[in-house]
Length: 116
Length: 112
Image (cartoon, rainbow over all chains, first blue to last red; front, side):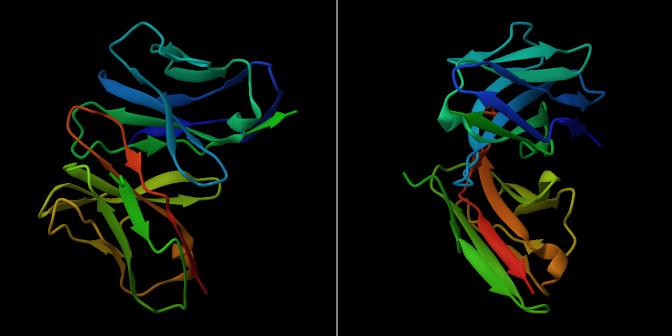
């Protein structure tokens, strides 16, 4: 079974500052995908960013970027210029390549609070 | 295009009652899944389907049944509700080659 570990249950950051959320995973697979999902108080799950394991270049989406270390099995999310709207629960997720039905394995989440 | 819809949004059941959580998607996605979200445990896969007529178990299938008679609908049935099934339930859909899950808004279920 795959495991995804998020070791920071709660974090806070001042607005306009930068914060990094950690995620590690355990797998024997070589081809897989990694994701960060955001869950605001509305409960809706929103895709923030994704990374294909075969790509060495780290993914970026506007203020969001990842630090993907395949050998270390680490996948951290950096949020730059934090905004109040970034306050949410953030989940790291793993998916094996060619897994039937695109099954995801999720971490336990990090609750991020942006302080005005 | 409504995406993934779930009904009801909230439900309270008594132990032993049965009910069906509804999920529908209008994106013609072949893959659909059910997850449950519990505090401190993230989201865990209950059942999934790779197409009409085909379903399989995920990590935590006990106490739940599914069927998929059409591409659009993927209902989750609780045959005899237990307090341990108190949770938030998410339905998601995706398709081959996309590698992203599109989530519904969730159903908060309380079993007393």
